[in-house]
Image 1 (tube, rainbow, N blue to C red):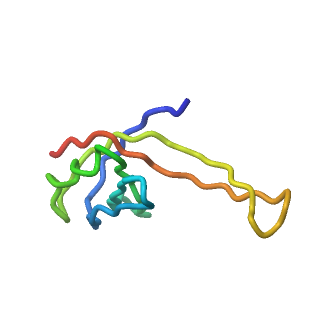
Image 2: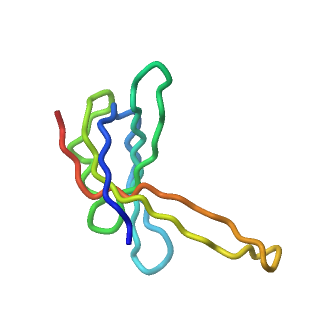
Length: 97
């Protein structure tokens, strides 16, 4: 089970909703920056029924994004026994300042 986190970020980029595959799966990405001496950039994914949440965001504004940290292990199609690992920040709530 994934654990919930939140981050206060400056919204840098708001992506368009993408439909992936033929089963109606939707995804939207938002890039947020945690400012400081060494700024960190994060890509948050809004999936399924959460893709409309970024509609309230404005690039350059600040928001607190609640998200789950998701990880996935996928066996390589090129090399049997080799694995690729993917990490995603799946967002589910936005609070604007």
